[in-house]
Image (cartoon, rainbow, N blue to C red; front, side, top):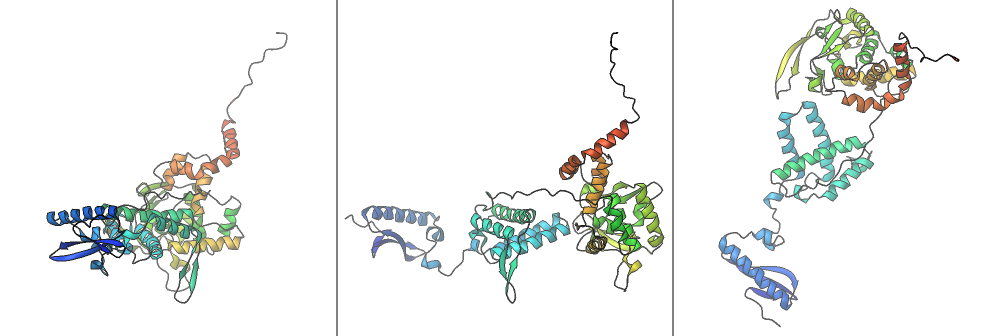
Length: 428
């Protein structure tokens, strides 16, 4: 059998090598059988290590990650857990996103990171782990509560895609900054989802719901919501200073978030938008004027789109919960959550099939389109940048209402004199 090259020796039935590093002789197992071929390869490996030590390029841990020399130690680049990297990403992201968006990221990350394991090094997370996480989010999973196990229900495809999108951004940040060497999210695609069809109130249901609102102000609020298509946060933040009943319009200047913060409206195209008021909406506001127009204005702090910047505004809120409050805890404006409660109560009392409160906005869009409104006009009223969203959300609904469109066209053409084609008289 071939001789052992310098620095190569037997260790039972396997081979190991020795070399001098930092003034001490080190021995490392190779975990390969003691054969002539392996002896030669071991000698070449040892010679290469000696050369790297001489040139100062030798990385002991990369060459022998399982070495007893590092037993119990954690590599510096493995100290960073998924939670630490995610928190760092979110902190840096905070200056460029709205506070409500920040809260959404934080809420979703709290769930996904807990499922992955807060103390898991980010370098050890693979694509397989993330696919398993996605499946658990979609189908449901079991977690340990304070006293017993809790079964969490599955989430919608849209919610799961949002969670995975957050993780993609975190792992991209980790890759760009050297925390990982490859992105395990790279080959994970988004889940398919069906775009939900709008489910507006019918013209028969609408008056029943309004009549079952618990007081005059709530009836006015939901009437205005359906007749203008305002977002609920925009309704809560609406002030008399934003309204010109003489000219028949209102301006959308601010929004109230779920976290009870006044901010600019959701999108830039929504900010300072002019909403034209149809006659019924003007009548609703005239009625509401008797209730709240002479109230004392409130000084509120409205955040701007610039980070950590806010301005004071004087607002006399159109809808004031103090008006019909049964205790002194009511404020000067409704919260977004309280609007949903009044909507649900009115639907239940009216015996109308339940819909989410956001359908008030869809009702405005569907009714406007059925009345023949230009989609570009509807998009502008609702605060969309263009009509693309209108076609995406209401395209199917518009096709289902072709009969109404035909009736509209017939009514418009009624005054047009349509003559039968000239028919040559027989025998002429």
